[in-house]
Image (tube, rainbow, N blue to C red):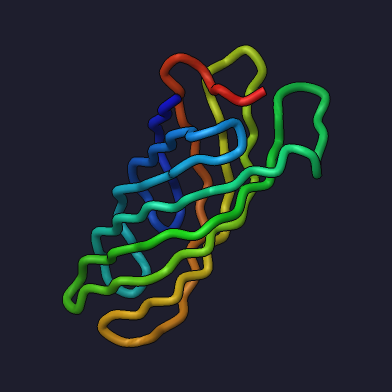
Length: 132
């Protein structure tokens, strides 16, 4: 199932997520980065979800982690590797999730530089969230 919503923080914009299996997904964003100088930011990550570490009375609360890529378009555009780690709350009976993540980034082009992003967001899933 595919979900679309908003991501707030660094970066801020539109977020999407496509579940591939009941424990793996691809997430992506098209957003504005406001750190240092304003820049357009695109990223895509492959995520794994662990549903067994945190139990909640309603819904699901998996920890997610993965690896992906980011392109940041600014005066000197950057390409880097992302390693997102976060929590996703999946609502019972509603096609929504909310998420929080911290993302270390290692830029490789045009030079090597480390930075981090952090954001929260919410997404609406067309056809519901397909995780049991």
